Length: 193
Image 1 (cartoon, rainbow, N blue to C red):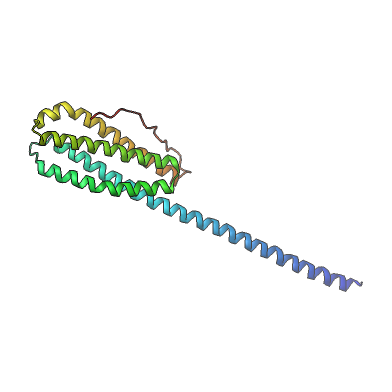
Image 2: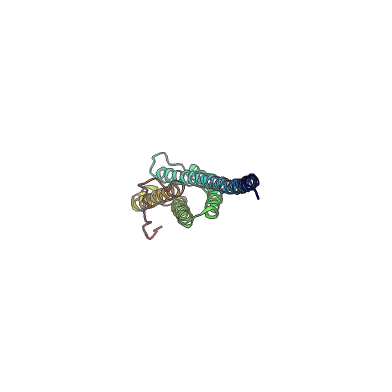
């Protein structure tokens, strides 16, 4: 084989090898792009689920605290309290759906924090329902507030911390590279009614 033919064969082989390497690089790049797009979509779904849950928890928490404060008001209105309790009951379904979505999206530390916050708010609403029933049954509201309000404040503090724990856990998952997020350990306390 003369040198011109050999040079032609080497050139053709080099071109084929370059084409194969280019095709493999393109396929690899497409796979990386596909994985990246999948991660972005997963992050969007988590962000939306966490946002809806956080909003639902905060709204229900704030409404429960407002109801507790209504017992201290001089212009206490039993009918208004019953309406607020009805509203809180309606919010429970929205919170349950939001917590369920967070449980599906995960991870487990965020799901657990959401469940604990929803449960804590439920306990606080139960306390307010008990107070409303006691006042409706003839118990003096001022005496009830003076004897039970400290326990309501403890519930409020616990619920605020639980919702904050959920928010911090969400931020940790959504922004893992940011320093300074410490997930508070939930304190175990006994709920008193």
